[in-house]
Length: 178
Figure 1 (cartoon, helix red, strand yellow):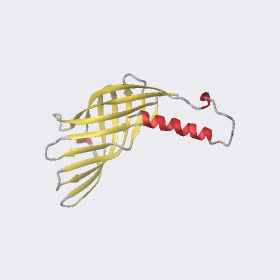
Figure 2 (figure 1 turned 90 degrees about the vertical axis):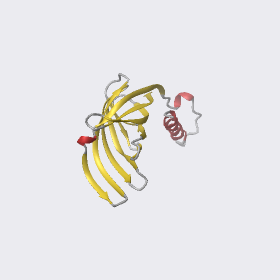
Figure 3 (figure 1 turned 30 degrees about the vertical axis):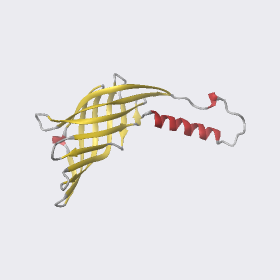
Figure 4 (figure 1 turned 180 degrees about the horizontal axis):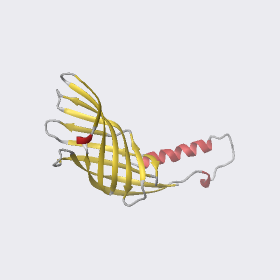
């Protein structure tokens, strides 16, 4: 799944190069190539919900929208922290909550040098009646360090002794070399 954006970027670069108004034939060396390596990753994490900064709450009898900033700690193949600016939409009629927003991961991936990755497409769905939660993370916007992109599936595993949500993750991380 990660190769689609890389392929699209490569195709866009090839189109830009070929659209320059120059009629000379292009050789394969004229188009940039990307060397990618993908590895499976897995681990666990804790959402430090008890220390969240709640910026706003807007509620009615049937729903609530809360904006907050939280920190998430990751262990396993991804080691580091996530600064998580989240909009939580609670639907009390259907017993659901959806989290979206922005997050930045700072840490390492499978022993890499330190890096920072941004995600503005994540989504977590929570069943407020059963506690079941799952989500998808798209750490694909490179900020600093090695050019690595990760797509992760996240499954909630309950609450720890401090009442903070815990979870496991698994997915693919791709290193991009230009």
